[in-house]
Image (tube, rainbow, N blue to C red; front, side, top):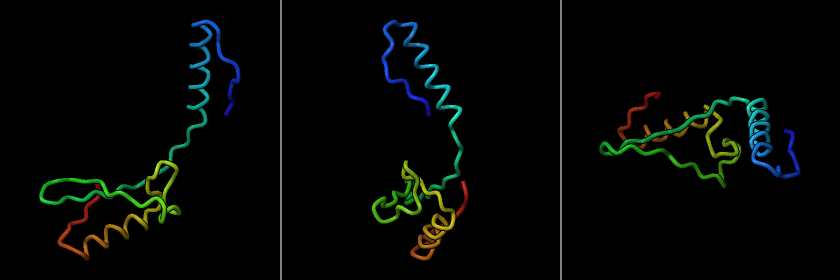
Length: 89
């Protein structure tokens, strides 16, 4: 990613600076699949929080699950522990 090291001195240059950097970000963007595990307890829905210190191999930089087998394993553990119904969103 190209990075400008100087700051623009006028508002017009500032806008060009923002647009240039945003265009570069868009060009560099690569879509990645990720998975979330949601649980429902007595009609209260919650997103499962993953321990980012112990499960780093399965997470991306934004702490999203990137390994489908890992997310399926979490769901299977929940189903075994209780009367949970697993269904994809």
